[in-house]
Image (cartoon, rainbow, N blue to C red; front, side, top):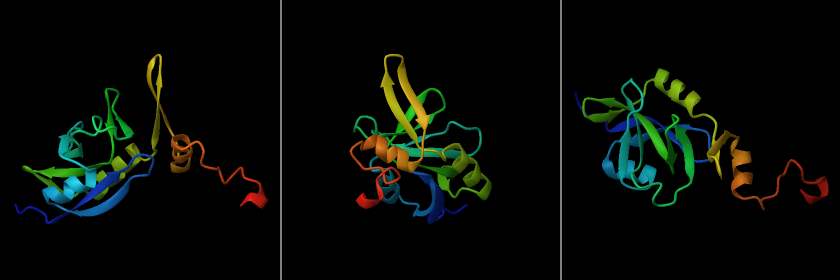
Length: 144
């Protein structure tokens, strides 16, 4: 089977909702999408994988989402299909499944008991990451 020139993926960025994207199926394009050398992780039984920056944590990229109960993904990552030894487009069913799984952004807090995570909205994530950013929902009308 021929390698797809472009593939349909689900891009997941820290603090954002996942977004469906069409991307060039070339190594440079995929590396650009995650911001570094790519690493693949296949934690599920279906023919999909997570593609992330191989050194995301070492580079200090922000934590993005938990991977099961055993790891954390750092920086941007995407989910794509796998066919033979190549990446391929996700199906509608796969897009729906993984968008639901990773829909809510997560915040991460280091505690004396370990890493604590909670889900949030993109707006809550932005306020958490930048506490000095004014919250427009609580500003007085004359300040807007």
